[in-house]
Image (cartoon, rainbow, N blue to C red; front, side, top):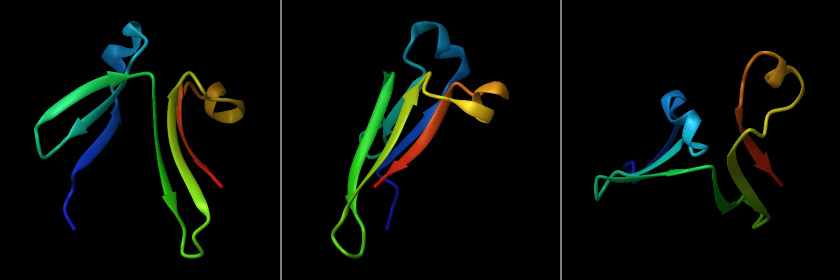
Length: 74
């Protein structure tokens, strides 16, 4: 397997409201977004969503200063 896409948080883009950077590694292009998600399936064909959203933190993560949290939703 090889990497085809990356997703990362950029603190300096926080002021734009779109600090999540999605990079297409093959075409060397990127875009800034406020939310990114990908739908996958587990070994039993049940849907699983991976989601990153700016300003979605709660609880301890928020109290510790996190603004963006990765969620795995089943």
